[in-house]
Image (cartoon, rainbow, N blue to C red):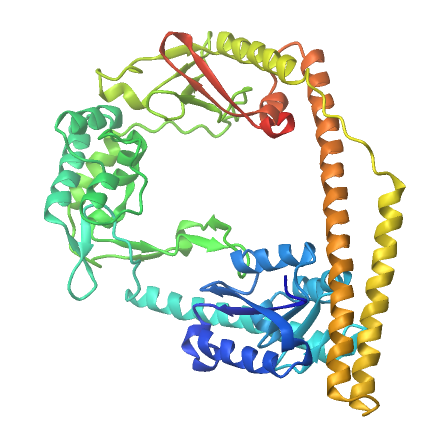
Length: 508
């Protein structure tokens, strides 16, 4: 193992790709040149962490997460970036890592363009200059996001902007505009004709399956677009898909865009906007169905407004799946509630066709199975010898020794700069200090990992004890127990059930 590890972190977002100075190759060149000039680089291991195409407004990036995890495992001595914005554009999170997390693990942080080296700022945060750079990077990202959205909205108003993805029934023409896809468009017309004749969505789905017409996902996959998971469709259309198509104004040539708004800059969460804030552009592209057929088809699909509709709650909500076709079972709240496999309605040959289960009986069976599983799994307790206060004391001693050696290295470098010792003496003594530092850091990391394992064992014991107690005291299956213990329940014909647990790791 190398005595010193330098991590070069490189990030390039989609917006940054417009600037050559921020390219991955330029960042790599700057960082390697700077690292090569460091005295610590003589026998150092240099690692690269590259996030290509990721925004700096948050830390949900695979390589930066891997880097931070290695820091917490005491595997990184120094992190180097071209500038602060490469590491992050969120001022609070960026400052937290640079000022709190990295010093805790004795990890040096260098920003080349900002002339920042945490080793020169021991005991402080770098001053107002650094704080302002954090804020400037964050506000630059916000400003860029707002300008980009403004330009996109202006194009929407002019009818120039459209999504890269076409709805089923359309395809992109040579000039990038939407045009009807002859084969799929004929299926769309069939759906609207059947609806206009009074056929409901479930019956339309059965008719499409009977005719052997592939679903939209299967059709796209057959034409090279594999963005949809079609492993469970098996040629069966969903009624909800048909209802969405019957409501889609794009089929009459009207383009609707800007229906949702992002809640926060750099975030992924969005909300549906009021219709008067949408961008609605008539005669934007060729229509597949005429206005009269569109209105008639929509009118025939019955809608029952439920202004005071209550959210149904039941213990296995969102957790019951058909073991044959893999789809979620529908819960019907009747006098005697039951679960039903709707997906197989179109195919009489499926083993789950018309399969239904009494809800109360199924919940009782799941509860009984869970108790039996816990009785068996919980019988073998986890026993470990506690390390106690010895770990805390030993870790403190290691930290003291690490700090002392780091100080010795700094004094040694000062002696070399003051010409009190020659280069060969400096290298020899530094090599000896690095060897000591490596041994102590390895011992410290091993002790930390051991303490972490012991803590995990204690937490498992406590969780297992609590779960067993809750199951023992419960009169039946509750939503809280189901959420705690169950990932999903697969049910099969003739009453066979299969439970996938959330807490299997507690009994390994």
